[in-house]
Length: 411
Image (tube, rainbow, N blue to C red; front, side, top):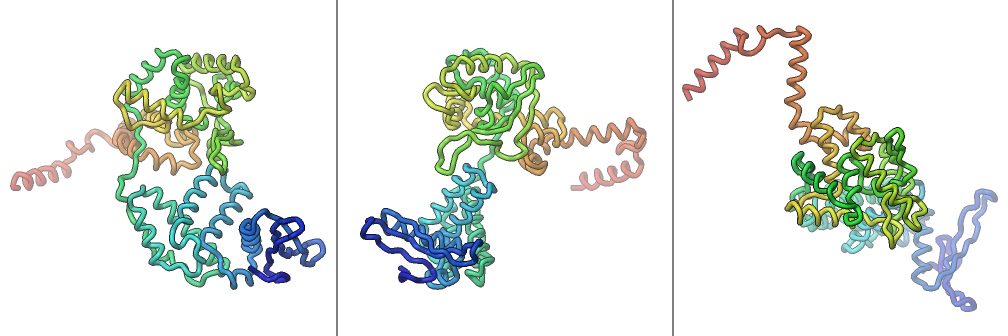
């Protein structure tokens, strides 16, 4: 503990108030002088943690020189900064914090960052091979970020992550598949025959499957978001989680591109109207949510996923589909119908075309030969090439084919 009067801050026990105080000096931009500040806590540990945090924020070189700075403290400070300047959402904060807490449990998580070696970091990542590639990548990203910050601030002279190689998971990457056309048709026919009173998420499944909404977007729809006259749906927010993992209504969608106005297919209109009538007659539904449970404020997304998987397994023997698969099904059908990728991007709410192309690579590959045939037919229609120039009628090609056949016969 620093001595009282130290420029790096100190903590002390106030006997009269029976509280622990953290005291430090902060530069006052109005007076140009150092101003003494004090904050009280119930325990010595809380006071020390607060003072440590302040010292890191102030980047007090004397404090860091004497005490060092733990790896996970750098990550927490950086994460809080990103949340405070709205660079990340509360849901993102919660997800990253889980990774940081996992790092805290390691042998080096609370060690000073200048004492951690490449061997320790490599051994840790190697120990994660039983997890998915995604989980390993998240851990590596946080470590890279911590040491990059430490280098930029001068806490370390050499970045040990440069020599660390990310291992490959023992697990195969999980692929989110779409329903086949036959599966989609069978599931749709089954859904529309079931009463919504018994299958409360029936209309959620239909909206996701035929409009491509994320589950959080579907659960955030209100009656005010639906324009029946023009048959439009305004997608502008999502059901998400806060930094503590509690379900909350977000002010926007997952990405800025997620804000979009979608056309409502004609056959879905009756189901929207049905759900609007339910919402309008529901007690305590002050937000006029299209989907609201009776005994809680919001629908829990895992509950919808569990119900979908129960239905698919029990009724159709399908075990590898989730609510996200329903969204993926819509995107797949769009591509199969010949829709331009940039239009698919807009409908799905992807932030850039690269996301669309990467997510649906296999679907695009499947249909690229058909698209090439369209180009070749266009060449013929526009007389850019003639039938006389095709492979079978081309003398040079025929000679090459003959020679190739002779060679094959010889083998």
